[in-house]
Image (cartoon, rainbow over all chains, first blue to last red; front, top):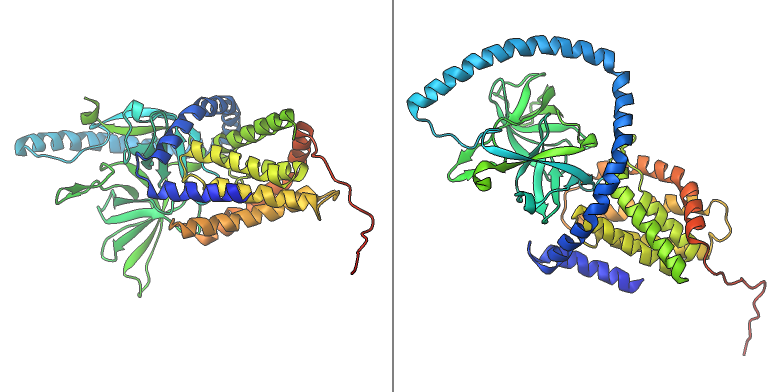
Amino acid sequence: MGVLVLLSLVLITLSFRSEENGPVASVQSAGSTVLRPFAVGFERVAQPFRDGYGWIESLLDARSDAERLRVENRELRQRAIQSEFARQENDYLRRLLTYVDSVRFPGDFDPVAAEVIGRPAGAFTQAIVLAAGSGSGIRVNDPVVTADGLVGLVTRVTPNTARVQLLIDEEAAASAIDLRTSAPGIVRHARGTRETLVLDRVRKQDRVTVGDEIVTAGWRASGLSSLYPKGIPIGKVTSVGQTDTDLFQQVQVDPFVDFGSLDAVLVLVPTERRR
Amino acid sequence: MSAEAVLRATLVVFLAAMLQTVIVSSLVIGGGAPDVLLVVVVAVGLVRGSVPGAVFGFAGGLVVDLLTLDTMGITSLVLTLAGFWAGRYGETTGRDRRFAPVIAVGTVTLAAGLFGYVLHYMLGEEVAAHQALVTALMPAFALNLVLALPLCALVRRMVGEGERTESSREVEVLLG
């Protein structure tokens, strides 16, 4: 038993001290590659059961969802027409000014679709493992999204797998803005909850109201730029509060992405890298 | 342990590790998810003894750490200690007790949760204590207790009981 405990401690130490391409990382990469077919097999077997569970769950909310979506559809149709006018005007003005912009989502990226094949157990880290890695062009710090919005960031890559730190992890954060008022802040996990986010560092003079949509800010300054391109949807504001003693507003955000039921995601690989 | 028992235990622990990582970790019920691998390692410890418990705990943890690209050794360390403790409990006070699996799984779930939190904190990772020790651990505790008896029965059936040394009815103490 002592030998195994010692071996575990040695592994932990080496994992922390060795570099990204060190011997421990190589062993882990090789192990992950060997285990990947098993994980993919298990995932394929589990998928019909997951789909069945999701189908039954969706039946319970079908009526209320249909009504809500009808109302939302009407609003979105009007906004789509207005947005199209604004887009055409924007394109015309950009051409006039020869405006140079930072990378944009989704135009400047080639998404790589990847299946989710694993999750660490316990509440210590919020992450997922994907069945695609550096062989598919994925690198560390690539943003990960779904059709609903931002999922997280790639933190480790092997040739055939990649680990993604979810936005609800304690150590994750993304610079973001209120889409309506452009009030800037930092989105991070709300402590004491499982899947709620907060928009932190929002100044008291900035206007944020319940129902506002929060998207990634995608800033660029002094040669540095945000890891996330601008315009990726994150969530909707559910509450705004402030006290006299706090420097910033307390803005709670309900994420668009359901982090508990991620089956497949898109890794945003810059188009430049693919060429 | 015979070669066949080792092979069977290896298969059971490997399947539990894969099942946990691929499927069970995402089955969040009431804020927490069950830990099938932990329950299986405790069961192996109970039916086969402390050393097999520690060895298969280490192996199962290694599979999880490899597959999730997590810090190598963390899950192995937690499960090695869990398997060893369960084995010692099965060899001593838990012996022949009907609810030994439930007691062992409950105790190990709480101890592993607390130890895991301390370990991650010592490694400098940000983990909210309330989230780790209350919101997620309490549902996991309840779900693991539910799984304890059926999984222990399954492991006992698959792996088989370890050899037992009969306890003495009386001990003669020789003085001088």
